[in-house]
Image 1 (cartoon, helix red, strand yellow):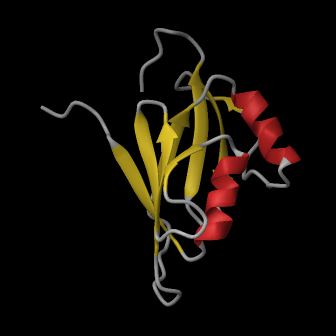
Image 2 (cartoon, rainbow, N blue to C red):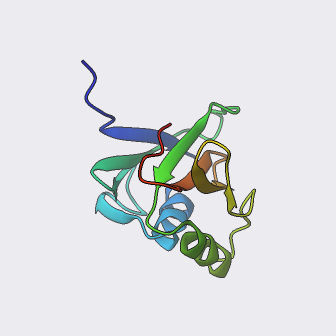
Image 3 (tube, rainbow, N blue to C red):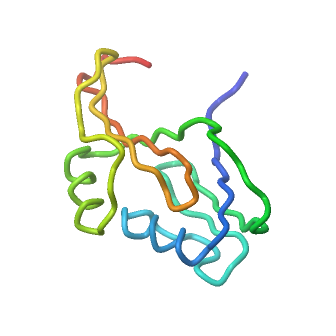
Length: 122
């Protein structure tokens, strides 16, 4: 039986830029950092990892990582203050979540969400 996701690992072409991006959103670095080839951030009880990739290694749209956050609108405002341009503004979705999307510097799509009701399910 699957118990949960321990971590998601994303490739990056520029670790320094990627680490600064995630730190600006409030992710806590647990291992690695701007000069490392591998960095791990806390994401609630799970982890978000970054791994350096060669410049010639390219990827296309692969999916989306969805993070639950305490306050969607506050994180959206934090992203704007940091100079980021979210792909969408916060909105309430018909499936019972408030969310917005943001593309990281390497083109990975992130969604930050919060259930609208405690009984909402994915």
